[in-house]
Image 1 (cartoon, helix red, strand yellow):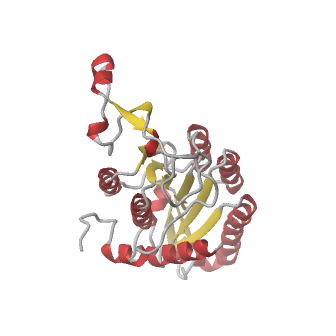
Image 2 (image 1 turned 180 degrees about the vertical axis):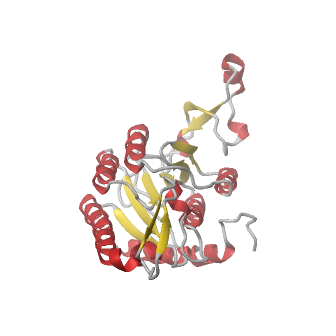
Image 3 (image 1 turned 135 degrees about the horizontal axis):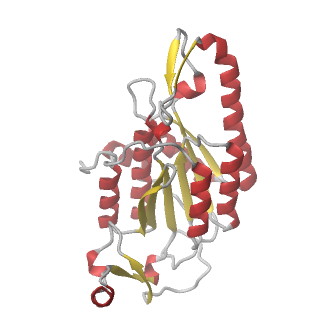
Length: 297
């Protein structure tokens, strides 16, 4: 079987085909099966207009609104409000890193995004995608149609690493913007001040979103395997520095351990799922283990 999409591999789909991602808490919507809802019954009544975005079904375009406003709007119905999953994908410069001939962190994150979006669509849940570095890039609202999934896969194939990172500020902005309770999936290397990012994650939890954090790192970043005099290049600022790795290895590894531990502790306190995503571990194997463990909790 071939999907025709770079980041949606048949072998990975086969590994996760019997798994699902179910919200632990109540989600807002009219749910047809997997999730708990605060509402009873089911409705297909018109809810609101929303500006047209890439991936929307053209049949939903309201042509009367187009005639009046000269802008494309789609009709949004209550039946579209199953669990809403918003994937927040970090595309900053540091996500372009790889040490050995394996996937860059961004490529790994794109594969993970693709397979999660596939699972959500198969469950008849709505999935959206936002990419960010210091600003919002791609902004696809949550939808559940195969057409929407296909457009998301095509958009993923066009992504390239961007500029510097401002994870915390971006997350605060999005937490204020996403009004309806749902599932937030953050995929990032989290290269920002941990205390600031943690406050931003609190913002999502305060608004009663469920949050899953995939912390994507290359093994070289966590093990520092360098031995000889090495020139290091900052993918976001362009700065270069030449150092003897053995002179800084112990201090570096201690800082990395503290960096990761801070996120682990905070996520446990906030009831946010923290998932270590090492790019040397096949993404489908990592995701399968996580989903299987989550289903048992």
